[in-house]
Length: 268
Ligand code: PGA
Image (cartoon, rainbow, N blue to C red; front, side, top):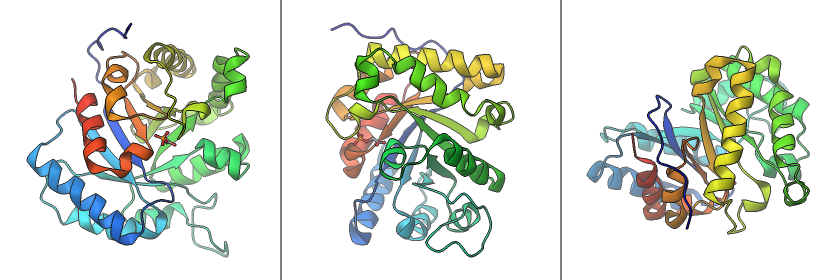
């Protein structure tokens, strides 16, 4: 099977991030986090930063579990969504970036295809969320990706490029330390279909070019692949020079498989 060439030396940070979506209840979320903490203390991951995104409801509990561990490599905490308004106010049901930080969160996912599709989030709303998060000091895990029909009509690169360049002004001032970009082809999310390492690499190379063109400092952005990443396909994806990690849904709900994915990306 053809594979990507081994990654060349880079200063880019590697990440494996678990997006738990609307899945574990409180008891299951606590035992999943505890299993990760316990297993990590026995086999530290050296080169790859781990992060998890439980539901908003569980952030405080999971944050305190993480803070009370002596594991050398702390798992970072990610929220799955953020309000467009940064501060407190009369916004029933919303959770602001300030409140997320108060709950121990360091990052937030913005632009995930499930929110683009199920909640009709467009680029204007995504921009408001990105700005609210960044203004408050949260880092953003910004998701882009094409649908199956867009890929089949050879529009994938154009669609993804447009999703990024819609925010050129923001990208020209964004703090590179607070910015991770995740390429998640919509047809690969939760479907068991993964982009081939070659297709994923090709899109990541395009994205890196688009970002560097906007601003050379963005060349060092960590670019994650997401969409049915599992322990058995992670190693090939991790070999690709422009894939710096993974955003993992289903396989992140099992501590063993999540850590096997992290081990696959734990290379210098
Ligand atoms: P999946 O989800 O790994 O279950 O495909 C990925 C994601 O939605 O981030």
